[in-house]
Length: 205
Ligand SMILES: [Ca+2]
Ligand SMILES: [Ca+2]
Image 1 (cartoon, rainbow, N blue to C red):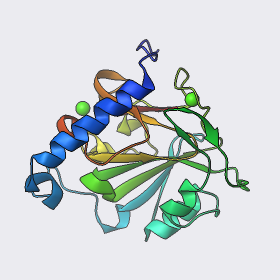
Image 2: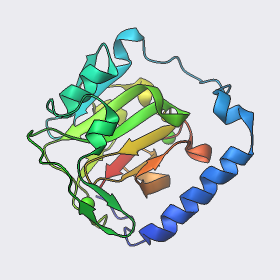
Image 3: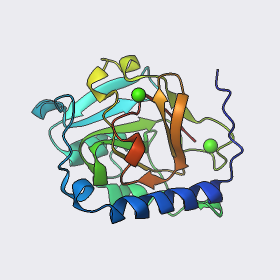
């Protein structure tokens, strides 16, 4: 059950996030050099580029490269994120602008990164439909990283940036089942700042 308010102005939220990113940038080299260490070890070399099928029991597959993972998550329609991003993308101002005819039943909807500035390891989340433009609904949800198949508890409290695709925006929560502090909905966040290494569940809309 999701009882959180979805009525917050997306424009206001975007401006708030932009201000937060500026503030983080102004704090200097610590974030940009990735000097801050993690409490837990990163996924090993075979788990750097993984996909999660949100429409089929959160099935997880891992690949040897980002290109192979993105190809899987997009049903072969893209091998890079710029190619994936060419699909419909919404803005704070309104409806999606569809620029390509999607030929697949797989839609990349969100990417979660272990490090700030979209640095791997990465989890590419995909499903069987693009998102509706409104964020008053929930297009996809992940209640915890233990609910991935197989489970990936190492990702709990280890996301530092995210990106969204196919008319989706992402909202991350501190606690499992969408409780506690949150960031989003947002199209992308290069550095979650105070929410770094805290994401335990998320919504996509
Ligand atoms: Ca957490
Ligand atoms: Ca939606």
